[in-house]
Amino acid sequence: MKTTQIYSWLIAIILIGSVAEIAIGADLKTVQRVTGDAVAIPSEPKGIVLLAVRWDRHWKCGGFENAQLRVIGFDKLPSAKLSDGDDQDLILDDAPRVMTKPIFENYAFLVEPGEYGLSRLEIKVARSVSDVGFLKVPRSKFLAEGKSLGGSFSLVAGEVVYIGHFYLDCKQQPTMWRYYPDGRDGFDGYLSSLKKAYPALDTSKVLFRLFQTKEFGHDYALP
Image (cartoon, rainbow, N blue to C red; front, top):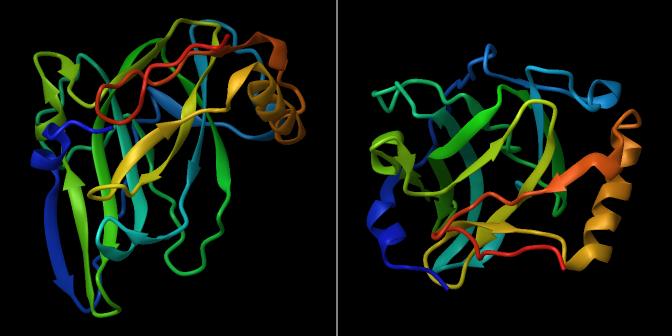
């Protein structure tokens, strides 16, 4: 299911005791999270990206007692950002620290048109209550020659694009995996759930265009 390349990227940092928290921001000129009635068919020059993330702990994950997605970040390509410390343009980092629920949380972002590449990934792992750390892949490991080795998504102005459901895969070492609703009926069910959260969204205009990756998901097109 996976290639061995992703394992060479994952840097395990074991922190005994507590885990340091880092405040992270995003480039609001490029990306802005939107909710409720603000999620609608955008006017130019913006587009909307839809995705969902599960932040709950996955127990018995890849040899660890548990693992949890903590950070997923994307840069608008080609990225001029060189430092691993620079903020990503689109970032998801609001995983609960204590109480988690086994559900996918929906997200909608108003973004500038273009291509966005995966540029940061962090997974919290624990072998016990006191043996806790992170598997981290920073920007410098993802981006090369204007592309992301981890994968990317794209959209043009005026589009509303669904790029996937993101959660862990635990068959080998814990890693992120891009999932999706199964078939047209599954996608229609997902759109129906979105309508409850985003009443102004014309779900008939939502495009199924998955985050394209060789490392964190399989190719798939709606039948």
